[in-house]
Length: 66
Image 1 (cartoon, rainbow, N blue to C red):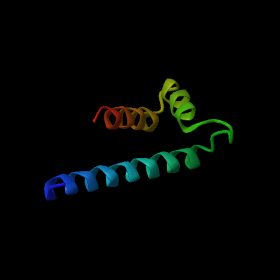
Image 2 (spheres, rainbow, N blue to C red):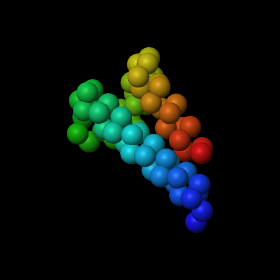
Image 3 (tube, rainbow, N blue to C red):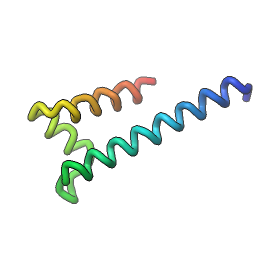
Image 4 (cartoon, one colour):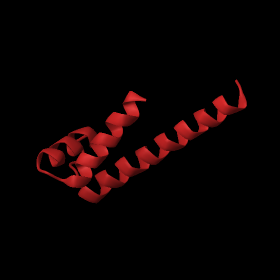
């Protein structure tokens, strides 16, 4: 593995860690039902027009494409 590949991998891991933290904080903030997944909570709130939920769903979708 070259140095630039290693740095790229580190950046990707750091980005995922940040996303997990944002999703965790979102679920805690919105006090979803214990059995409700983060995905279900995001989807439900996005359908209700919650801007933060829409933003997080878009960010997750972009992360998954990369």
